[in-house]
Length: 177
Length: 184
Image (cartoon, rainbow over all chains, first blue to last red; front, side, top):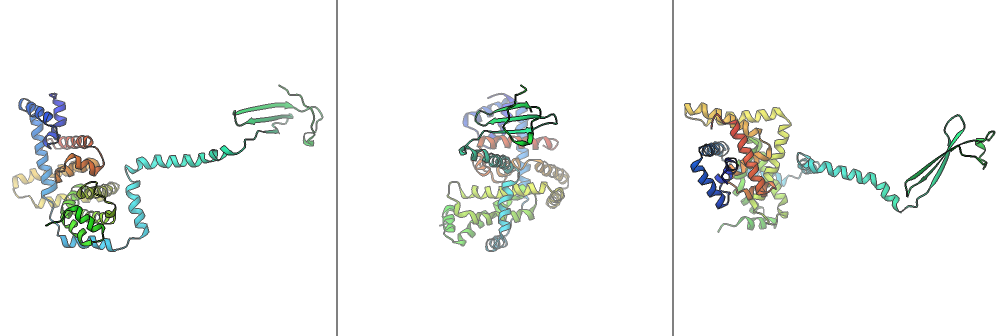
């Protein structure tokens, strides 16, 4: 582990004392001979000092009694159901929560919409045929749909001359194709 | 002899509010410092710290001792703070006021007139750089710098692996270094 890029990536962990002994020793040896990595180390140490000064030193001590009073007041004050829901919903549906909420909602919606086809699984499947006039030239169409094999047959045929379409009589017709 | 955190938690689970008061007295300052670091606003931090203990009290019966009490407490604090930060980000005016307040407060503590200018500039840049970090990157920096927590504890608090903590810390420090290169 002597590559400068790798050393710099591990410098933070090394300064934090979070590396294993062999890695830590390799970094220590490298720093003795590498000016660039040593400069990087000094920069990181300065950054740590500045951060500590900013984040820790300037924060005032807070008195316990008023703080505890505030906590106790929250404990003894009963919250409304609306606040309870908001308290639960805010972290759940904000930011990273959305990462799982959106796909979950999509899955639920898909499940709800496909429920219809699941219900049909046990029901008997019916073939059906429909005949209707499709234009003014007297052409009829017969439609045969079969669910199980997903087959649809469309049968176009022309009325015999003089046939009364609305009579409903069982007359013989010859298919046009 | 002083009771351990776990003993106090068990008493609290049995309904002793005095035990919870003792836990609050042990951790209120530490929690407050972490939240100030995350929010950069003392008043908001006080509110969030109190809310943290309130929620901890309500959930204490579900605490089984699988992790230490303080990592559990920090997890609650960090989650509320991150949530609060996101809401602040959605409201830029509040966010700017927050930062201004911090600058003014910090200016009061400077003494040496020569280091004053340099320090103030550095602090302003540092505050701006920290505020530019994502809440997750900010959280690792605060927990490591303020509390000196181990990567394992930080991982438990943030719900990620030690490797992720290390990589987030590296990225966050790199970002801060880039923005403060003139001062370091």
